[in-house]
Length: 255
Image (cartoon, rainbow, N blue to C red; front, side, top):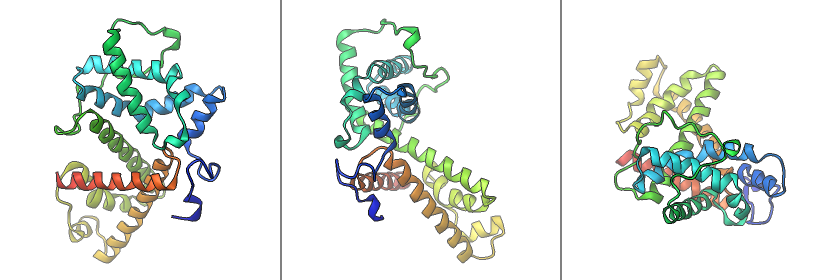
């Protein structure tokens, strides 16, 4: 990690400018970018929110309703962003705490029939969402939220990685990484040997295949780091998040 990544909490903010927190700052300053932020948060967090709600015992339709309501009432009405402080570190920790409180409040108020003003509604297209893609049977609601967040983050990193190699005309590099690293972990099967990969794709030898794989792994790590940096405010927290995600990979490898 280079020196510019060594950012102190509440210190070198300009050096370590993160997407989430800078946009939240725009909202707090009264900028006209609130819906852009909401769209970002919907894209990045609706799956973890939905998974959390399902694990709390809500059925498919109720979980979708609550997901919609949470982003409208907590995010769009600015109760969340008004409490958002970079010094709190992980944005997803703040979001999870707010979500838990929202569920408690909803259960207390029994507001299942409460209507959201149509002109203020943030559309969240969950109509075709499967009943539930369960993360793992032994996870509680908080763990399901974090599991889904990590899985969704990895999906986005892998999609960007693939896109970059395809655009460069280097699809073979992506295929090797996909077949040897990504798919075996994500789909839970033994990875093929480098010998098998060389035979499948006509690669000269295992050394060449290994070097290609290392190149993609380096880009994977730097891309993952870029996404993680968007949600925290210090280099220390980046390293903690990276460690958690690699542990997530190892857990999937051994499940």
